[in-house]
Image (cartoon, rainbow, N blue to C red; front, side):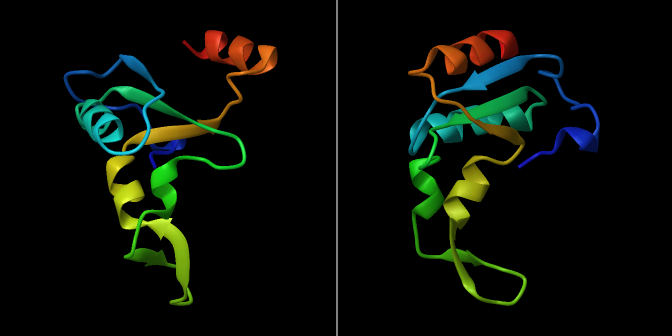
Length: 102
């Protein structure tokens, strides 16, 4: 995922913030395009589980030692150019944090 320390995004959607609440296939793929075009995409994942597609596979990404992980290639592809945060949107604190970010 894109790290905010990499510098500002460039592209026609630079300066646009997208709060990504999508899950599974179509949503993350569509929002990925917005990130590819320069939007600042913040992907919100569920506490304890994260995005369902993290574990889609195989193939799974291997760690630096060559061992299999539970992180799927699909997840990494569909969520490129996004920053990720875990928020519990069922809690008042999580909702308040989301409002601050939007």
